[in-house]
Length: 240
Image (cartoon, rainbow, N blue to C red; front, side, top):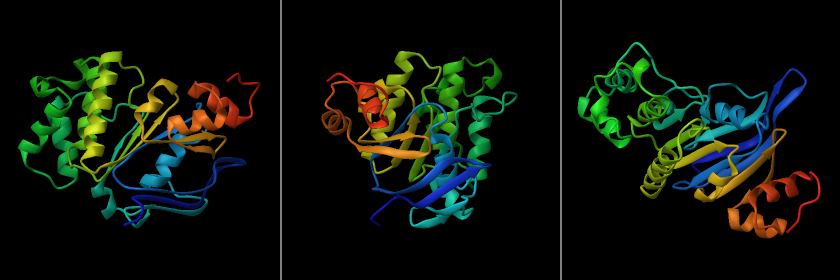
């Protein structure tokens, strides 16, 4: 398989607004890709198209060689949304168990393994509503990982988390990618960008630049990724 993820002339309109505007790209497997851009640039809409959560106005999205949306293919995909996708009245363990059951997994060992991966093994019996904000983000990640997906979409996974937890998250993302998982991470935090193997700068529904952090800085003639983004966006004068 040449591409784990593919977009072909992908378009999504909301009224007269083109949230995703004619995107075509291939993403190779086993790498971390960063969707970088300001709020409203189309990152979340693109992820929803790729996961099949919404249908395109035109064009096609493919994941693991399958055109999306495709319900059976969801068993091979993990998706962590911006909002905590958990049930507050359930315990941490029950939340992960619920998502595991949705994928046909009844083995509690898998549930406990997912909790351990995000350092919540000691919180299995804790009601989710009583967890801290950072713990709820970790629980959301465990729910997205319990079925061991081949492709993982993470929409602003580190928003509202402390610096130490952010480092832990990225260390785990790297471990997953090294084991063959393809990961797409959306963010508007430029200091996270260098943790990705490749970046796609997005603005107004389009990819305005693509490459590693080092490549994009070199092309923009700047030492700073935020300045590089402004360069490719054509916003203001950027000093090298």
